[in-house]
Image (tube, rainbow, N blue to C red):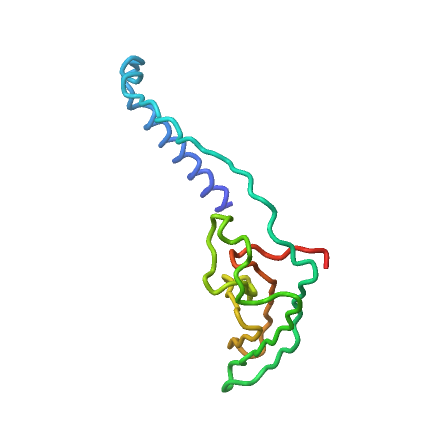
Length: 155
């Protein structure tokens, strides 16, 4: 019963606020028309086609090894080792200059995402991270061009 009363009070007070806000007008429609402003037109937007990104049909990324080492009582250092095939980490993707988007000066890399946190760019096929002991974690890793576009292939 208390929940219904609180909701009723909130609805009633919301209606009162709307009523008071609506009562401030003198009823003169001409004065309202004088205060309206015309929004400036939007700036001109141009859309330019962008060519396809270079394909890396045979590129592969696999987790080669994960090793856990206790760090005190409450944490574990996880060491990831990746196997990268047919893809060169640290190289600039050939069409990077033509893409007109953010490009990593360090080149192609692995996007490493742990527990839905922001990604970390890995330029070497190894990475270490410390996590709480006896806890569950989720990892997503994929190859990325130097301008942060992922490699998407059926393989």
